[in-house]
Amino acid sequence: MSFAQEENDNYWKGLIESRLREISLDNRYRKRAVVRSIDGGRKLIQKGVSYHNFSSNDYLGMSQHPDIIAAWSEGAERYGVGSTSSAYVVGYQEPIAQLEERLADWLGYERALLYPSGFSANQAIIKVLCEKGDTIIADRLTHASIMEAAALSPATLRRFHHNSIDSLERQLRLTDSSEGGRLIITEGLFSMDGDEAPLSEIAQIAKKEHSSLFMVDDAHGIGIWGEEGRGTTSKQRIKPDILVVTFGKAFGLTGAAILMSEEMAEYFIQRGRSLIYSTAISPAHAYTLHAILEKIRGEEGDRLRSALHRNIAQFRQGIEHIENGRYSTGSNSPIQPIIIGENSQTLDISKALKEAGFWISGIRPPTVPKGEARLRITITALHQPEVIDHLLQALEEQLKRWS
Ligand SMILES: *Cc1c(COP(=O)(O)O)cnc(C)c1O
Image (cartoon, rainbow, N blue to C red; front, side, top):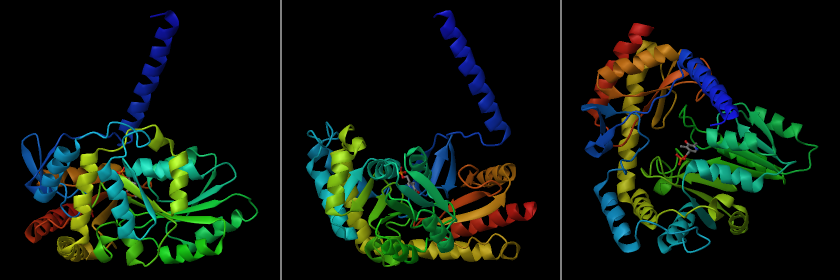
């Protein structure tokens, strides 16, 4: 190693150490726990101890559903596990094409394009569409994948106050004189607060502006409500120009799709580097997603959605009774945020709940705004009513101690 290189190593070593120290002092240090899901996903085991899982996004219990596990094996036997290349070479295997077709049909769009994750789908949208002179106008609380791509984009990023139509209109007026296109972005169901966006009002505003496109990321809403589980846009009876659905939440697997017009899909196919220069998803994976889709659309999906919403109602009612409703979540979705405020307090409560046998993540800035650290409890269709009751008792005990 040359002298210059050694200096360089020391520079980075020192810098990284001091930045890590800063993160740690601020109670923002993140760790990854090694766990194993059991009991259909209701519980998880860490270091030999089992916990009730109230942190999973697998709202309908698809991740360990026996039929879905069988579909995974069947897909692998029929098509193999690897797509073997980019979709532009020989990776566009039958199950992938079929899944895209079924997704478009389900959600009422001309086309669906499959992506390996919601993160990559959101990045692709901004990279493909937005150029210098364009403006991205996004709700302040939209997902990190959107915000990161928008911040790196040559387009201008403007953010409107969470779910505020006035603020959106103000941001639009500020771009009145600009020449470029506008991409208005929000989520169907927000991932940290569990609230819905006023989609039809935003859609009306977007429609008035001929230079605007309206995009909705419905990662958390898809599968859990609307007819056949079509999600928040179906529930609110709107059809955005671009709809993102992801398969890591109610689908219980991974992946994502972007729903759009024929013309736009062709544009994405020509310009989307992440599709061109990346291996297509596994055909067995696509086959499994297809099996999940059929379940979500069908009778079993309806049954699971009813169970989910019953569980959510039970939890909400319970929270209302703690400390005169001080911690009421205001959410009728599987995402139930209990706002604590301080990072350290949130971590302490999360730890105490863990000791009581409940796995609940504490969410801290920068994932949520400063001073709004919270317990993020997720309810699924599989939770048993008595376990939800036990959780409510444990929560009451902890929250009373801190109030
Ligand atoms: C989870 C999530 C994503 C990322 O999706 P992945 O498939 O997990 O990469 C994107 N947007 C929102 C709103 C999400 O909640």
